[in-house]
Amino acid sequence: MVHPSKSNLSTKGQSWFDLLQPWVKQGLIVGVTMQILQQLAGISGILYYTQIVEQAGAGILLKWFNVSSSSLSILTSALTTLMMLPSIGAAIKCMDRNGRRSLLLYTIPMLIVSLIILVVVNVMNLKAMFGAILSI
Image 1 (cartoon, one colour):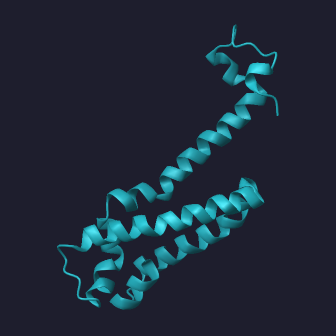
Image 2 (cartoon, rainbow, N blue to C red):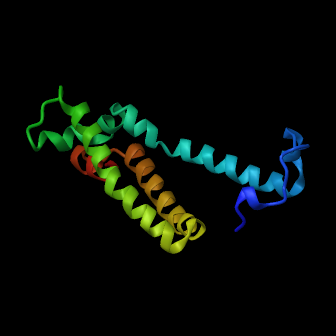
C-alpha cells in the first residue's frame, strides 16, 4: 500500500463525474448499498426507540424480575448498549482475523434465519412468554 502523499496521483483535474467511471461505479454501488442495508438492519431503531424492544416482549420478560414499566425503557436501552460493547469488540477481533467479506458471507444466513423467526413469531399467535423469548 502506498501512502497518499507518496503517490504520484494528483487531486487536480478530478471531478464528481469521475465517480461514474466503470471501475469506480461498481465500488460506489456496493458501498452505498451496504450503508443502506446497515440502516435497514435497525440497530439505530433499537437504540433510540426502545419501544420496539418493549413491543417485542421485553416487558413480559422483565416482569419476571419485578421491573416496573416506568423504568423499562431505561433498562432496555442500558442493556442493549451494554451488550453492544463486548459484541463490537468481538466483531473487530473477528474482522481483523477473517476479513470483512467472509464475515458478511457467513452472517447473511444467520440474519435471514433470525428475520424468518421474527416474522413467524409475529404472524402466529404464540404464547406471550414463548413469543417474547423468541423475539428478544
